Each structure stands twice: as structure tokens, then as C-alpha cells.
Length: 166
Image (cartoon, rainbow, N blue to C red):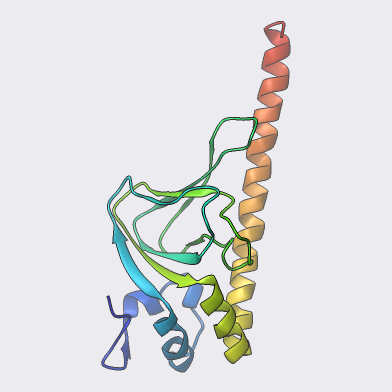
């Protein structure tokens, strides 16, 4: 799906929180780097451990981010709503995704290759800095949530295991 039609920016993309505050010129510069795709609920966009090639933005629907530690159960890290970002391993230059992403609803997402995002940042440092600031907020929030979930699992395992005599 074309993101810019007849030099007019599609409002549904321009209104995403990730792009808010960018000028029409900035949006005209960055949006051609993105590709739009639609997924049916239940579709896996990527698995934990797969090559981290793309950063994603949710346009509609919901994406569930799941993490499977080597020695524990799979946990839902977060549910990414419209305007949210996922797959940021690609933006960080990681070779693989640290979590998996599954559509819980029919969803539309925008994707940008990690290398293209780095190109955007080099070619337009002002836009690049805005996008990187927004990504850093998402990363900090998600890590904080994961830490709380890991603490809860540890707490549950320690206290319930001891209570069961384990």
C-alpha cells in the first residue's frame, strides 16, 4: 500500500503517536522508507531468535510481544496498540529479535528496515533524533515491564515452591 498518495500524506499514518510533531516535510521524507502490511489475527510476524530486520509501527489492531527465557515459561511482555512500536532490536542493530510478535487481532503495521532507519537518521539528523528519542522511551518502558514480570515469576517460584516443600 502506498503511504504517500499524490504527494498527500495519508492522515492515518501521520496521526500515529510515533510521527506526531513531525512537519509535513519531515513526514514526506520519512514515510517512503516504510511499507504497509495487513495481518490476520493469530499471524506470527516474527519469532524470538529470528533475524532482526525490521522495526514495526502498529496502525490498527494489536500485537502481543512474547518472551521465552531459556529456563522459564513464555511470558507476554506487552500488548502493542495502534501508534505503538515493536521489533526495536532491528533499530538497535541486534542480529536477532529478543522476543516474538504475534497479531492478537487483524492488524495493519508499517515496517522499516533497520538499515533504512539508520539512513534516515544520517540524512536528516533532526528527524532521526526525534525518532530515536521515541524509541528510547518505548525500550525503557518495555524493559521496566519485563523486569516486573520476571520478579513476579521469581517471587511465585520461590514462595510457592517452598510452600509445597520443594
